Each structure stands twice: as C-alpha cells, then as structure tokens.
Length: 70
Length: 207
Image (tube, rainbow over all chains, first blue to last red; front, side, top):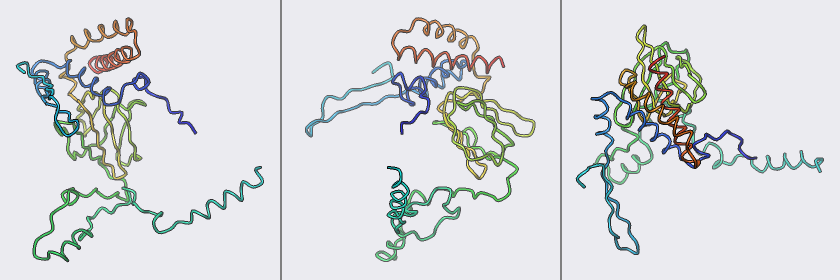
C-alpha cells in the first residue's frame, strides 16, 4: 500500500529536512537587529578539516572555514 | 477465491501465537516505569566479578527519570524550550503555550493528548498568568507527552522584538522577485522557503 501523505514542496524538489531547516534558520538570523545579529553569526561560524582516506592512506585534507584568514 | 480467505487468515494468526521472544521484546517508552531500576544486569554481573570496585555509571543513570503521568490532569504545563546552543526555558511551569505547527497554530494546555508536531516558521507564545512571551521560531518540533510536559526544540528562535522590520521587508521583496524568476525546482523551493519565512516574520512583527 503506497503512502499517500502529502510531500512538502521542498522534499519534492530534492531537499532534505535538515537543509530546509538550516535555510530557515539562516534567514531568521540575517534579519536580527544589530547586537544580536553579530552574536548569532559569530556563534554559527564553523571551521573544520576533512581528510578522506583511501587504501589505508590519507589523501590531501580540505579545510572549510568561516574564518577569513584561512 | 475468497472462500478460503478466513481460513487462511486465521491460520496465519494462529502461527503467530506470541512466543516469549516476540511479545514485548521492548517496552514502549510510555510503559517504562518512572522510577529508575536499581541494579541493572550490567551492575549485577560487574559486582560478581569485581565486588570491591564500584561499577561505572552508564549514561542512563545520569538522566533524570521521566515524570510520571498523573491520574488527574495537572494544573500547569511544564515546558522545555531548547535551541542547539541554549536552553531558553527549562522545566518552566506555564499555563499554556501556542506553537506554530505545520497544521496551524496549536494551543497546548495541561492534559493535552500526546502529540508530535513539526513546526513551521512562526511565532510561539508562552502564557504564564498574565505574562505572554513571544518567540519567533525558524523551524523545529514540539513533543507533547502524556504527563503534561512539552518539549519544543527549534533550530533558531528569537524574541520577536529582536527582528528588524526593514531587513524583513527587503528580504520579502527580494525573495518574491526570486520566486518569479526561478527556473529549476531547487531554486523555486529555496525562493518559496524564503517567501514563507519572511512573510511569517512580517506577520509576527505587524500582527
């Protein structure tokens, strides 16, 4: 028996709930008044390095960062 | 063909006579007792082998047990309103909350039927006596339990007076225009999301 629940428009466009939720949150954050806005954007900054491994050896790591210096 | 149906159906039910492994292999979370069980099997087997050292604690022993479901409807609703980075309300006793569920504004009073509601961008109001506090919630979920505890989790929630109406108007105009000019499904979806969120913020500020 196929499920007939209505699919939200973002899911039928190929987006996952997490992406949807993060887009909504970013929109709200960008609409804040000043001291709160810079606090929120500073809080959400991320900085991480990803190293993929293949055949037991690490490949070149990629760094993703919101820090402008990197 | 259907003359055999009832025989076949009753035969399959009979085959599934509950064996000890099939029935209640896991209790439902609503059936788990409110009091912590002392001396779990792990602690007992630890004691047998190493009686003189205390057993290490497991994560569940640090958790507070769920408040039991009272037989009479409680007078107050206990609200836990949490964000990824902060806990806005923690076990606060209030009279009512109104959450922006995808099916519309949903009012939650003590004794509400257990519900899981997905939230859409909108305003959540917390009513305590005559005080009303309003938060704009970007999206999230609301879990209402049988014991009148409501857990509202949101990715981003701000008091409505932290929103800047100029930025909201600009954003609404920008995304409405993007919606008109979008071509791929994904662009259309993003523009639609933007329009929804901005119009919700707009009505929160003006309403």
